[in-house]
Length: 595
Image (tube, rainbow, N blue to C red; front, side, top):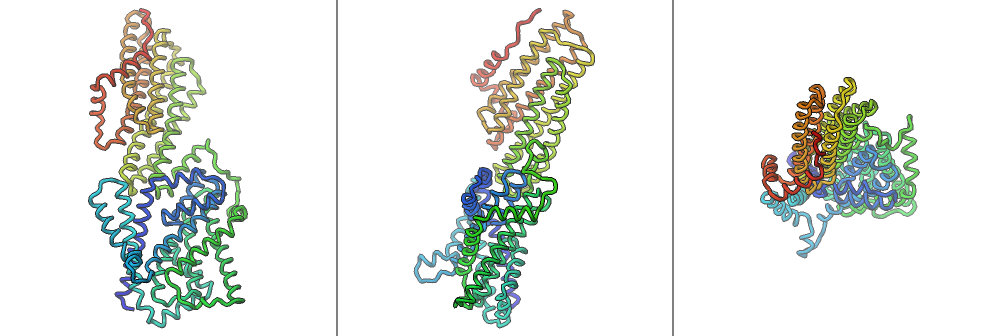
């Protein structure tokens, strides 16, 4: 084996790993966060959990990715440890799909159909189709499908390159002698675990073993412990991912490790005991890619079936390993820091899902800002309440924290390879959290208005109070509509914001004019007028931010959208816009003037 064979082997391995990464990313984008959402609705039934783990891992082609996601779910309080264990078992079975696909290269026969089933035959066709789709298609879903096709083709080309590069090893006696070492179960398990821990993918390490099997020098006896060790090595990814997480999240990674270690010990013990008494004739026989896929599947399937009834034992073992010191629970949803666990770094690997988690937290942020506005209007117009004023200040601190955490996470998310839809969603959420933060600021400004009224013993006239209450009702309504439109992603609701915002502007103008009249008749003082004007200004600004939220939502669904053109188009749309303005004007008609 020459230096050129080594370079070909390294290049083949690089293409294999890159192809697997491209294919996995394409599958994840195509799924659009749906797989992760299924996890959230997971029941506590262990069999359903196992089947779900199997299905999801078979799709995304990575048990490590599934387990890392589980660590994130448990850390965020989305899933309980008990449910995650079943998914882990299924994930180990699902990861065997890759080995079966790679084993197709070993098909033998002269018929056209059999030859076309070989990856070396159909992967070039997939590559051509994929490249054509990437070049000429503008549709995101088609591009994701193209990435899957191209990734698979590159993966298979890398596999063929590795197989070709190691082919000369069959004539190297030293290579056969090295392989004899791995007949020792301990050395074989350690070698498999080390290789997989380095490349952090059991599917990839099994593929490498399948490529080496093309030399015809690997026996069943040396391959078996390596395959089992590969399953242990894949646990490293989850263990690294669990650093800095909650205790239950660490337990997920520990369960994954225990599952594979216990399975390996049981499998090897049973196999070598039976071999000692029966004497399996195939132990010294040569294995190919298909046989490796069979062993890989039998191990993961049998281990899952055997350990499935002992989920509670595995859970108990995890609790004994990662002990509670402060009786950490499953998560206190009233604790703001617990809520921020939804912004888990692990979710960045699934951008569509991460975007949904950001939306959830943005909705909570909006609810806090809305609560502040409601309380602020109450203490400004009705009776001053110190406790409400303090709560608004606490809410403001919380909203600022939301903006900081969400903004930081969204910036990280924006640096990922996002689809056009997700990229636009990230931009929308960034704008919306800014609007919610400003709404909360206006609530604080209104607290200052209320405090000034309280300290200087100022009171609105009955006429002014009645008028301001009308404006407050309109502002509440526009805030409710904007928030519901954002939460439900309802474009029809979003289009109803601008007409109501127009009405709020008109109400403010009318109230200012009426206030001037009261000043002229001596019913109101100049000092009271400043307070009144500040209140109207803050209420009107809240309405403006609601308009911004609605506009961002509509813009998210129209790439050619222009804000100024949209507002002008609405105002010039005639009956539609004018009709809504008229209805809102009637709904929020000011009380008759008393002067």
